[in-house]
Amino acid sequence: MTSNYIPELKYSDYQDLSEQVHFQSTEGKIWFGEQRMLLLQVSAMANFRRELVNSLGIERAKGFFLRLGYQSGLKDAEMARKLRPNSPDSEMFLVGPLLHSLKGMVKVKPMQLEVDLETGHFYCELEWIDSFEVEACQTELGLMAEPVCWSLLGYACAYSSSFMKREIIIQETSCRGCGDERCIIIGKPAEEWENAAEFKRYFQADPIIEELYELQSQVSSLRKCLEKQEGQYYGIGQSPAYKKVCKTIDKAARGKVSVLLLGESGVGKEVIARSVHLRSERADKAFVALNCAAIPPELIEAELFGVEKGAYTGANQTRLGRFERANGGTIFLDEVVELTPRAQATLLRVLQESELERVGDSRTRKIDVRVIAATNESLADAVEAGKFRSDLYYRLNVFPVQIPPLRERLEDLPLLAEHFLQKFHLQYHKRTLGLSDKALELCLHYAWPGNIRELENVIERGVILTDSNETIGQDALFAVFPKTGNMRGDRLNADGALVQATDTETSTGWLTQIFDKNVSLDAVEEQLMRHAMELAQQNVSQAARLLGLTRPALAYRLKKSGILDSSGAA
Image 1 (cartoon, rainbow, N blue to C red):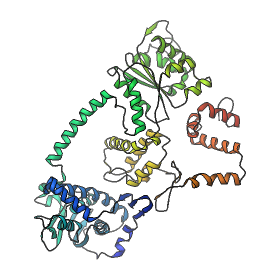
Image 2 (image 1 turned 135 degrees about the horizontal axis):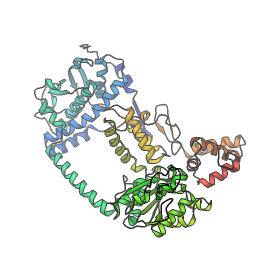
Image 3 (image 1 turned 90 degrees about the horizontal axis):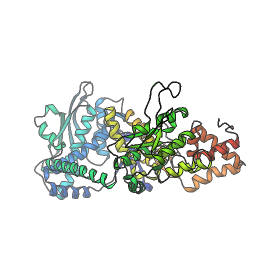
Image 4 (image 1 turned 135 degrees about the vertical axis):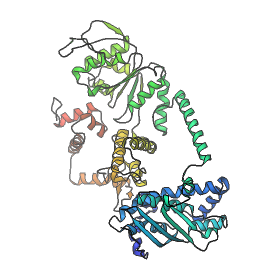
């Protein structure tokens, strides 16, 4: 229902907004809700405005500041709906003007306000008192020919449009920055303005920016071609650890040498394998990937090397194996440690003789396939435990490469998160405002045991739970975010701020409890193994990774403690 009532803004109106401000002085951070803020001198903004006007001209500088304010307005409209969901429409809308005042940008005096979310009716007339942009212009540029409250207008347009869920245009009809007595703004739907098309052009890229974008696109295309030639074709990452891996593996990409990719589950081994294939002379041939752990042991040979009709019950027709399908190209064998002994022997022959026999066949077939293998377990330990052939291990281990886990390349996390955001925006036909600053900070303090695959799943969850034009908060990313579940044992205080634990806090607390209760070392080890097995849902390999052990080493300890029986069952 349309409201014409204009409440007098009092201190109490700012109370719930002021509570959103948190200072973390020791961390050098200020938070407003989940957004990181800055305290910046008006004089610095004045100098910046003068430089932009001198460099770009008034019209382009005006468009820049309008677009700058627009981004801030989108964030605050989201907050207004959350803070006062049950208030009348006009009171809920006034959160925006109150935020303008709270942030020190301008004092807002409502003169007329008509807001009806149900019908979409909107009209406002406000006075802006002591605008920081007027002060900035008077200091650096003097009186201007036209109104100067550019970023404030951009904010107001975005806030009003997002709040009303329709296009609202706010314009300044008088401004002290150009000699008028007061700064007065009027807002109404875009279709009610005669100059709407002209005004909206400020929110679009101007010709210079378009030219820059076009040139940037051309440069990007050329750079990709050069990167492919020079070897930087290995997915997303700019951290030193990841660049070192890319540079190392690129040395082997062009040849036929077998490559062994090592690393935890989810670090992107298949992405690397595909990149090696694309960098090789076999790029125009097939790339075939197979997870050896996903195929039943009795079928793995037929899946890899093919089967002749009648070779066994159920083999009703001749079928090519993965190796023959990859002939001339590359095959990627993930979890190669899970191959059966017979499959290992056949694979060794393929690698040494470049020939194979289908299951149930007596004829050999020449094959030309490059093998890229991967495992998240130690093949050397598997050889020592008798689980993997030593001769095959030496044949695969010609060029081993260790892929770093995500926790060792956290510099790449923002790039990876942005990549997944774009992917899921397209997939779910929506566009969020990205991660909140606090959500990103928490991501950067999380250990990511599932690595990039876990990050992808977390971002997908965030996109699903967040509406378009809203920010993805920490609650949308993590269903149950552990209060002390990050790498250093940091925790969250009552305000949701991150408190860094000291080395003494993270190490002596639980150690003291162990000694005080006279808990034996064997008991501690047993409890750790039991808990790891519970977290891994009784998967020994996953539990071993959680404990930093090899699978054979953990299996031995589990059997010794009686957690596993001799058959390997929990």
